[in-house]
Length: 450
Image 1 (cartoon, rainbow, N blue to C red):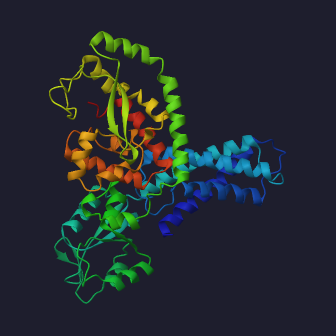
Image 2: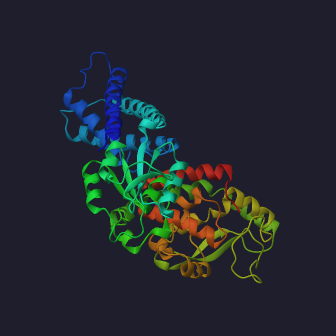
Image 3: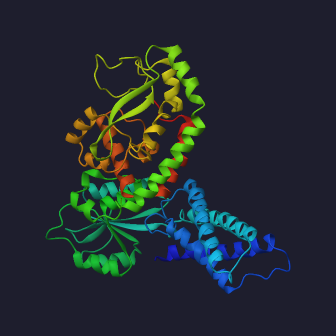
């Protein structure tokens, strides 16, 4: 664990103890016996473990978690802590903390933790707190690594290139070191936190022993696709091989993950359907008044395991809109869209019947958007790893939907695949919750609809 992470954990530990002190004195009577060492240790340990469980101390994520994501993550951490602590107090009666004091303590901890993490992220703007990154290589891939760091200067400081052929470090075109200095010496002198391997050809000149020495010296070693994923929240598909997928962390789609994801889907689909059901008759009436044709539109889409299913939507286009054109992507200001259909699309109300697809198990609440078989057949021929997006159920909303505009071309499909594969690799209830919150914002502000 790096020094910066240790500092973050220590701050949370102090916040936890302070929150317990405040919660106890506000939530209990003056004559109540204060919590002993065991209660204090248990409270601090559980709150920190919950934060760790939700990756607030992950070396990969701590520097890229946006401030807007913090409230959701901290709230989930408090919920986990409450469940664990109440279970302990129920099973072991010799350790106890009043329910009111516990709720106040956890609420205070959540507030203090947010303030501390927000302040910590503000400190990262200082050059001394940024992760110093050295790029191994000088080609196009290495230049791309510099470019993405330039876009995220809050978290990363580009320290230069290390040219394998010349065996010295470079910053842009200016040498920083003499050829006699090795990689480890440069890493130590420049206080490098992370080394990004950005060379395509590794035979003959790859400094394996130097990289091992850097690793043992505490430098984080990552390859270019992994660093790109960490910084950008999407995949660098052009530089990924099947072997990378095999050995990369993530892609843990086991039975436990699928079970909890299914419970998440059923809960939100049920709640969504109950809350929006009163709108269905009004929407149906408006569609009927506006244009001829059925209220609902069933369209064949490709689902999990490349199994086709019929997606259900409120009809937003004229009847038989594709009779002459065949299957085509919707365009901006599409003339096939009816007047009411345009409003429904803008407000995302046409997607509401897909809650039924989720309850039937054909879709998930969160996942890659399902595409039509005609488009899938074409895209699989031109985009590498496109078939891999069908390893999970398609979703009503997803990581690509909140990060990228509406896709209406093969170029858009490639860009959205980058986000879809990132989602599949990092699939978790925490990520699903973050996407759900961001989706609500997208719906409220009507971004990206066509």
